[in-house]
Structures are given as structure tokens and as C-alpha cells.
Length: 152
Image (cartoon, rainbow, N blue to C red; front, side):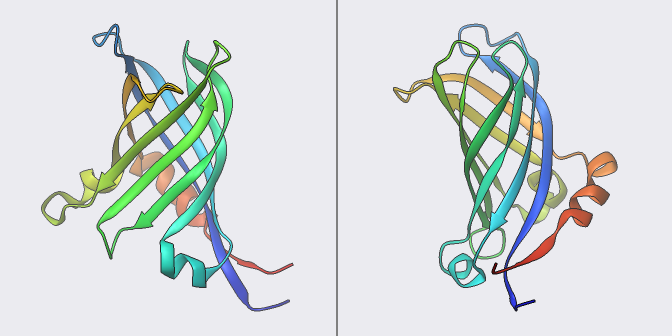
């Protein structure tokens, strides 16, 4: 076994989304991802992790694969950003983008609540979303998923 090269963890967030055309109709949305940082050295430069997982946006993107990146800079920039691509039920490509801005006077909410938008391939916002990390049901699983990774 070699020296640790990076790290990985799993995260699940759940909440709702609303299409821009019908903003009062909130529907369930959740995503589960594996975040991977293959190189600690690279992470120290760019604070980025790759994301892979699944998205369930009921009626819009029903249990579809996602791929993207996470900006994981809670100390240096006080931000955790999520951006991933997926294909909707209509066969079109979409992009989910949002970020948590860490606030010391509201640390728990700012660490657990993710406001986001869903964009069409032309860059138009088609939906808004708010998801949350559930501390009661997901924290232990999240903490237990953290692993150092090694070069193959």
C-alpha cells in the first residue's frame, strides 16, 4: 500500500425544486453523490472534487446519473459549491448549480442548506431548488464515508 494520494466521501441532499413557469408548485428533489479528490496537492491548489451520483427530481429528471464538480473551500473562501450535468426526462441536457456560503453567525444552516438553479443548455434558468443536508438522518453515514485514497 502506498501513501494516501487523495480522499473521497458520499453526500446526500434532499429538498424541493420549482419550475420557473410554475414557481408555486414545489416538487421533491434529492441527489446522492460520491465526491473524489484524487490528489491532495491538486486540491490544495484548486479546492475541487469530482462528483458522480444520481439525481431524483420528480417529474423532471427521474433517477438520472449526474457528473460534475464540487468547490470545497469552507475555510479559505467560506464556500461549498456544487455543479453537475444531467439529462432530463425530455432527453435534453441540464446543469444544476448552487453553493453554500458559510456564515459564522448562522453556521449550521449555512452548512446544511443549498440554494441552487437548474439551467437549460442555452443557460436559461428553468427551475430553482433548495436542498438540505439532514443532520439527524445523514450525518453519521456522511462521516463514516470519508476515506483516504491511494494511488493504484
